[in-house]
Length: 275
Image (cartoon, rainbow, N blue to C red; front, side, top):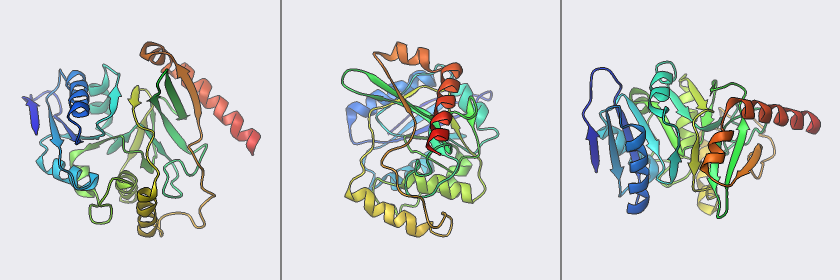
């Protein structure tokens, strides 16, 4: 499934690739992107029968016509009216953008190295409120020199996505495809960065079950020569600071450089106390 806005000569073309088996979620996230990209040429490519996320994304990027490709989960909401120009401008000098990531990957979790290596922020929905989790904002609005990112939304130049590709042979399920893609890109010399200034809400906290453990072992085997040995003890959850808000207006009011800089200073103090 694909629907498009006609391209022009003045703006980059965005291709949004979404693997989804849920018509309601697909409709919701598509409406979000239609709103965000209303003023720029774009297409939304729905993959509704993906054998894995890697396979679905590879199939989608082969269909894509855009200069910029977004590989998006179907359960996110981006709340930034300046989203399109920000991404278009940043991908002139960066190959891949994400919302959270690490400047030092040590194991199968993007947050495994802990502070001060983590970067980015993301909000999660709970029954009675919204939680904003800030993992690090060493620079605003962009943290560069990232080695790996979380896959809720991977934004990349199309030529980079085609060159690196998603490893659908090894990662033939729905876990670790994102870490493998971004870490492989970093090893290939691509520039990766995390956006701190784009509010995004994710309806999922992730699923770290037995299937995840299977692909974790495959990831570690594939990248054993590039990861530090031995790796640090595994952390149960990413280090950061969580703030709770009653609604999206309060969330947006807090999503600004002053709050993030204070949060970054707090995280640094916590790191110094722990050390």
